[in-house]
Image (cartoon, rainbow, N blue to C red):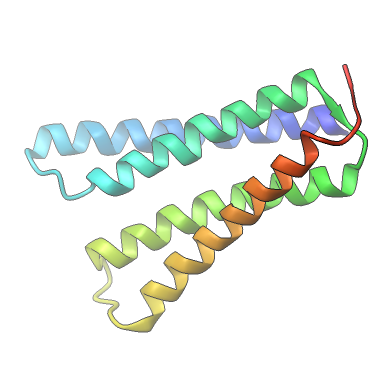
Length: 129
């Protein structure tokens, strides 16, 4: 089951890489850097971090599978929530203003922070190679 987590994280990582590369090419073609913050976070949090965690689950098997499950899904939801929230907050694509974009941004970031904390704990738990 845990190697399935590696595959799930790898696939979401590839999706974030595709979206991040598309945003980068869009910015270059348009000559506008409006998406620079979102683009950077999509690539660092979405692509690189999820990829690193995919490698972790491929190499190691954490002893506590419930914590691994919590980690994987908070990672995916948090990375998506943070970057989508950031997009809505900074670029206001639907004319959304006020508390909703801020809350979306903060909730996504908080879920991602939980994922990092759970991963930290997983690295100290018994694992098998």
